[in-house]
Image (cartoon, rainbow, N blue to C red; front, side, top):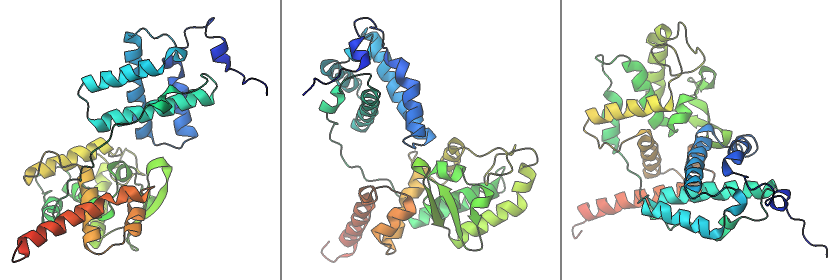
Length: 315
């Protein structure tokens, strides 16, 4: 059996010791977006994680990806630990590095990935924060006439809770995605996967009021196509939506940890409490794996346990 051909970069390592990791960053990110179909936000997260690794490699005077050994990767893991990062953050960095080194193997830059020998830290499973239905009602009713665009803000909040969509998915909604009479809309999720989500009558009324009374005076010179816009007519970004939720949550006395994702968690938990099947909920949330959706069964179990303890005569 003939010997395995060594990758060209390995053969030339002695002559070209400067195969610096940064040289492969942009091609790798383009590969993630074009061939793996990852979202812009996910690619940005990979960029941030890898840039921090590259900065560390520079401090360690590591000139080439060929010189990144298992020992050096373990030193990087120790570096992350010494910084006091959360295990979830460390685990995400490991995933980014594994994908990066698999790409280098695929492109025959290196012979094999030392990252495959590293395991991710074990993670505690944290239950997501959830608002009660009463608190959700208060939040949805909070935008008032003292606010610049109360109808838009009510429509955004109502849509978040009615659909369980992510902030980025709400930001990307376009007018042609809406079917208000049939009470559903089409959204683009992670990996550019399209799904249909239902809307409540409350959300439909809120969107209709916003479209009729407020949006026309906001879109005279902006992005006419997007559903939710700023005062200048540009698309409302996920950061805008994050600030919007924070603003009204603070007004009703909610924790500072409340975010658009809290409304997604609340939607999922309340759907299960109402009798929704786990598979149907998975489809509504756009989860690729049922394991991601199953965390909400634990949240609902915790709620039922609390009710049992409170209401049972011997609880």
